[in-house]
Image (cartoon, rainbow, N blue to C red):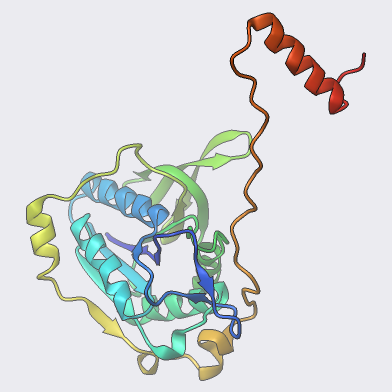
Length: 267
């Protein structure tokens, strides 16, 4: 069984900057981490591997050369191999161009995959679009927002407990398929020292745009149908009025007076 985990390296801080000309995130000089939801996906992959001996986990990402650090983290956490698609021509890719490139990487390196796992969204963009788009491009079933995963039908299907607006539901899909991870175990797994050392000895496969059957017009900013116009944090909320140092009866009168001032109560 071959599991592919598509991951993304994201800025560690929330105060991100945007290039005013291209509308893309400026990542240079910003500390980065493995996207937390991608780490959940990798954790699910490790548990599926443990339940079915002989399973192999391959981590894939598209990004600048420094995205290799995210793949090293994946190798520490249980991935057996890793693939990095990196090329200046990939820069500025929106969700569609990213999904199209990842699909080409998968077809070029691991066309015999059985299951693709991905984080439900990246914390820098929060679009939750790359996973579904990737599944559509590859023409495979998709299950979104998974919180628990297990093999079914002797490894021919994947069973997923997923989040929905009213709670949870359990669904199955035939393989090959794609599942996005909404969350996983409350306590993250920590790699052993041996795993950390071994991860740094493993070779990461690298691919450029010239190795993929895609046109220049399909790559990066040129192949993007959408563009980030503005990225900004929500406005800070003003502090409320505090009632302190009063006896209960006085505090109640002060609160009642405030509610009358604001028009919430009459009298």
